[in-house]
Length: 364
Image (cartoon, rainbow, N blue to C red; front, side, top):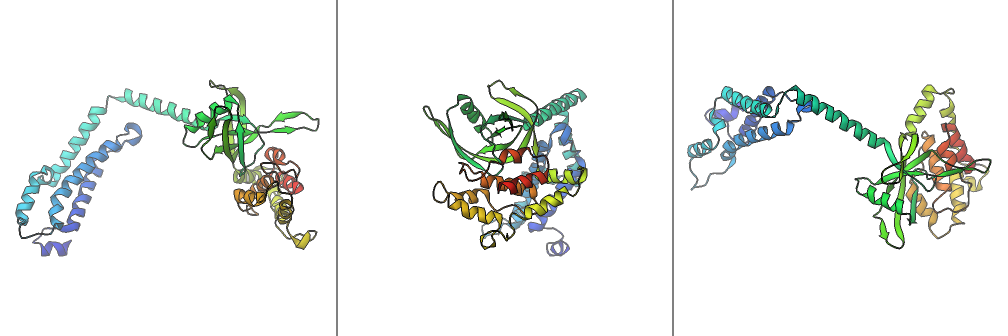
């Protein structure tokens, strides 16, 4: 800046001059504005005023990097012309600051009707936050299948209530609903599970007046129902749910469980799924040998390859919960192959990491 001032007779031109003026305007505004974003939400108004001030200054410097031509007026004439359209630049720095403070103060005064409005605004904001939080933990529920994360279901249904639910969820940014299955007790009684998965509608559903709707659903995070299940105004069931995270569950079990070594044992047990096995053909691992045998019993060619593509790689050894769920999705695919015992309800309801891994290994 000092070098340019010497070359230009003490005046700063060019891009550096523009940047200097912009930074000066930013410093003035920042020092004179009390940003009350949470209470007033006026940041957009202040930003607009700031942008207008910066643009006014930028206009005065436009000539600094516009090349002169033989027909162009002299720099002094160009500067005078721009100053006429930018009264802010003609003011001394202290007056500019006062002008900005006055304008910003007027904006606050026009919109400030006292502490009553502040209280009303905060009450409304709190109410809205509570409403959003309630909506985030409340999910519509459908009983179809005991899906586990990563599984994909293609289904066609004619149930009018489910069709209406699908139409309603499609209006949201991410169309999802809760999926629950059923389990059979040792007594032969079938019960509804209280642990399920959130399924996302992956492709645009195909609606047909006679055939109902065709859906492609992908299972995501797990959840557990909290409280009572109730019917909403539209007719389908919904309930508050708690979303489950595998890592958090494992950390909680290590820190608060009766057996702090249970997770470590689960990791060691889960390692057996992908380690070479002396009792298997060619010393294959349990997973690799199961895949080899399953390909011999496919319902249609390429079924297992497509399944593996949907599931992705098996989770790492230090993720025993996710590894167990991955195995459940592999050996109990959709549509069912009938080549393994059904373990998905047991995986969803297991209360410990070690139990989940044991269920997966037994099923494999």
